[in-house]
Image: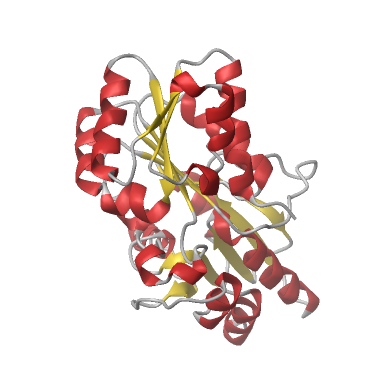
Length: 307
């Protein structure tokens, strides 16, 4: 088990050592987001903007206009929600900025609803011109940073705080857009965003233990979305489930519903995530289970719909 956010600093350092004109911007959370590791090695390329997210985003745009590649790293709630107006302007300008949202969903459990980023996917994917990357385990975070720095334009990378397993890449290499990391049949398909790797895998394995056959699909790039590959993966499945550390409105579940309607695919569906509600303070794993984001809930709901 390893926390994906623990690789943020290492990923930034690796890119800087490769010669990219990278700068890092922080809003008083460097120790929590692990950017303090970058600061220790490259202090002249690290900018502490304090708790002033709109200004930090504007500063990032200015850095991009000067030819740098800024990575603005903050809690997901603040980098997408608090600074959304400035983010929208950055997308309008096509600014070459990279945003990293740690502590997404209910990962910042004890701080409660004000810090639970359950809308960040909806807020970002609605903006034209932005790429939204959803790496899962710690290894995938490093590779997503490498992917992002070679994309011209704004990129949002969502990085989990919670420790989770590191997936065996000898079976299926890191997913760049969307792919089945497990495929045993068409009874069901589980689509998950990166921060729900553990819950999705648990639910999948539980269903296999019941004798059911299905697909475990990682949506690693929410935008732009590979519609052709999506249709190939799910066109014959009986039950389709989405699971996300996010509200079911506007995020992964919203996107998949749009795609099913657009392409005329009609499986029975399950949407796991928060159900149009604000959450509460508590242990993040316990909160996720309370609001239905668990392998047990996933298994039970899918199983109930399979004939």
